[in-house]
Amino acid sequence: MVLADKNCRKIIIECDCGCESIGIEKMEFENGVKEYFISISISSYYSEQSGFFNNLKNRVKTAWHILRHGTYTLHEICLNEKEFKYLKEIIQNYE
Image (cartoon, rainbow, N blue to C red; front, side):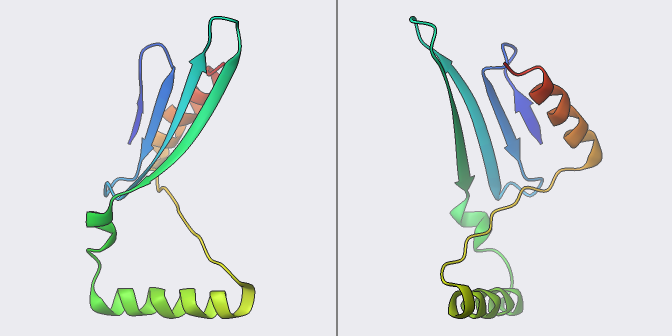
C-alpha cells in the first residue's frame, strides 16, 4: 500500500501483509533548507507470525550468511503493479 499526504510531504510504503513499512518525509525550514528522512518500520507482531519450519529455514540462512560474510540485514517491501506505478508517480512529483 502506498500512502501520501496531499502536499507530498510524507510518503508511506507498506507491505500488503502489514509487517514492514518505509516512510519518506520532507521537511522545509524557514531558511529554505530542505531535508529528507527515510525510516524503516518492522512490526514485531507480524514478523513473529510465521511457522516453525519457515523460522528454522530463515535462521539457518541467516546463520550461514553471518558465518561467511559477517553481519546480515534484509528488509523488503512487496508492492503489486498498481501500487508500484502509483509510487513511481508520487516520487516523480516529489521535490
